[in-house]
Length: 473
Image 1 (cartoon, helix red, strand yellow):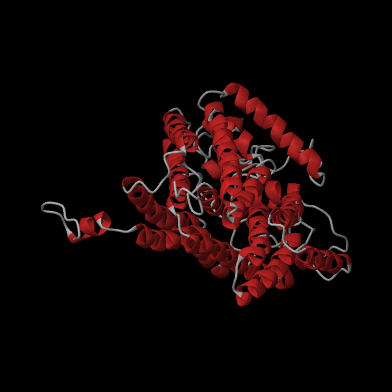
Image 2 (tube, one colour):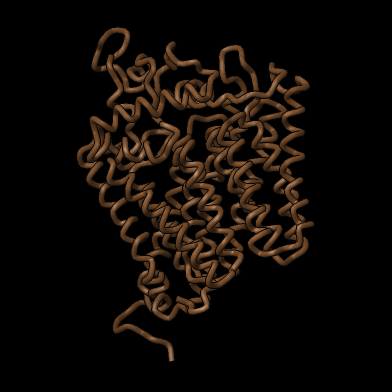
């Protein structure tokens, strides 16, 4: 007989009587929304060329609220394993310290909603936590498979737009990454080529591992074709993240093959990444794309000039002291200067998504404090709004305690996933753990963003869910 609360509504009774299978079915759509909503929302400003980057935050909010409800239901129904004490406590610290950081921040509004065009304030952090707990509450194999489908769909959506940007130079903010350097860099629907590289890194991994662990033959073909497309497009992000992400995806697939003791012939699937990536480099070398005839990395020009300075006006022009074409020099400079910011804001940070504010040293050409924030930032040469090391970025904006909590959460998730795999030999658990590991390593040269982080945290949650456990708990 169905349970019913006294004077309760049909909706509350529906939640009370929701079975674990029904929850997993609904939650799987929440995980798919985490993969797709920000990209779908960004299609409007990308296609129509409007300065409506805040739509990415709107897409994040839609999927975030959906998963917030799902996470609460999962907690109420006790679908989240009690053994996940460390990541649960770590997430609690991340949230509470973000609130404290917001209280002591430069701008409460930016702390809550994020810097315009970035959108990684307290609300985004809450949504990421909800994606994680929704994934952690899912115990169905089918639901976790749907997350792989969501990752592939998002990768394909971004790659289709990326291909248009590469071969036509249209619907892109990155046709030129310098006043005379035309490269037609792909950003897809991810706002930046570097963010697209992060997204495609885990998309390649999901495609390769999906080919290895999914049963349907047609799905395997889709995975291999997807891997070819992703690895081709990722090379046109011209980024260290893209190179490292591709390598990590290939390594993760090799680990999957050897761990599962699969036939070595399956190593040939790695050619679906290697050959398209090499073809992309050859196309650039042939002078077919833009105004260049040799392949090289352009991380510095993309992150400091084309993205933050030209697209969002969220940073100043890059300084003369930095060799903008030297990726190592750019990353070293960003990391070193961020360490200085951390030393002055060690406990609570600058406030969520507010790395730019402590660097401002002039009000503008007329010295007027009434100048708009964009004008002030533009005239502060050498400033930056993102450091491409998420651990340093977290320490600088939300304090060292938040950075330590982030490290603890990721380490505990990866260790838990490995332990669960050794006990259950569940290939899906290993897949999600490998995707989480790739993301955690990419965070050393990348930063959290609304295109990548929802997918990453959903996968991290699935890595520690009780699906496939012999005990079920």
